[in-house]
Length: 263
Length: 281
Image 1 (cartoon, rainbow over the protein chains, first blue to last red):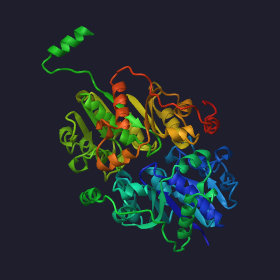
Image 2 (cartoon, chains in turn red, yellow):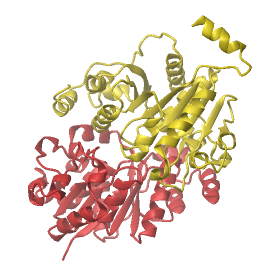
Image 3 (tube, chains in turn blue, green):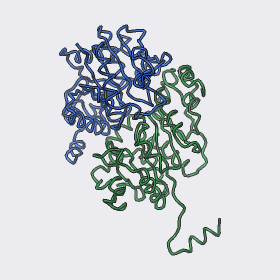
Image 4 (spheres, rainbow over the protein chains, first blue to last red):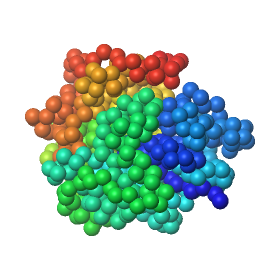
């Protein structure tokens, strides 16, 4: 049976797609799943850095597609999790080097010998987005509780709905104290606007900056609260019913509602 | 020079020098391009300059939200390029500043719909009417990036002190015209994290990028609040971040100012960066 093909996307950049891909992937691998992470951000790759494997890249996805190497030659196995692999993006090529059909063929092939293929989508909704989505049958939409991120996520949700790709949302970088004081939208607000099912709530945590710079997924350290949160997300992806960590309180939705009425 | 100036001022239609078109870019998304564009533009306008902000993020516009002008947008960039609206119809005047204008992006169109030559011509037209044309570039290096850069003569590169942001910024600098000298804004610096060795310092970032430093903006939760409210911090006299944006605007306007003093020593994460950018680091 072939594995699940999930694209991690957001519209807006910098909301945590790559961090989510790495940590959800590592959490799944930790539970014994065979996972392949695919960096679809051709020309601006970063998944290798966050995973800490940047020095071990020999071949990339464009070379695979151009037949310069075998798919398995380009895969990098993580040293910490036996069942976690990653396929790097090309850094000095353009996103147009890969067609949607070519991307889909690679993803389908990877899924034959994996339980999960997680595709890290580039920011935006241009060609790179379309090819990253082409190989997926499910999506995780990552957003932060900010008006601009939600507006972009809404655009992406619309595009995924049009392609009939089922999706769930991870609300990232939530600051509960700001939600309480009414300065940040609550997770409920976000899900209501996107009318989408919730997959996870990840609080803002400055440890992520450090672990990202060092190329160490935060799930490696079980004492970290985010490790627990990514593990819960991994379990929900696997079909378990897991209660959400309660961080939220009602917040400022008025302005957004008027915004969406217009759009 | 002087003669030319006198001639110009005697003409029936006053001829003014063309404004500067500056693209605000980063490669990586979410590092603060739009916030920077809104705040630097607001601060320039507060100095009396005539400023137009162009949202080049067709399909994912946000500059209107950050300025709090979303309900006033009637026409957008593509309407102007496709001659469905005049420039005057599409320009939205800021609520707070008489001399600040927004040209919004289309929300339901694609970046590939923008004709590069028409974009260049539009920026030229705007330069004739404004002192500064600030172009808010989309994330990435695809068509939207190319169109945003096409009409500009100068770039501000926004980078956060994170390895991935530095790598993307470095890539973008390499894609800009070689005769440009882009200036750097290091955004969302947390000095206390830098001190603990858990965040790159400004020196670390610039050891890789080697760009003239235009400014350093500290990470402040108020930015999120300001963005959600659509009120740029540049106008807030009590905000440190607002003051930093006003300093950046003064430097852009040509004032000679000392370099910002937010530069704790190098952190050691640089080792990782150095190996990444071996040739230049």
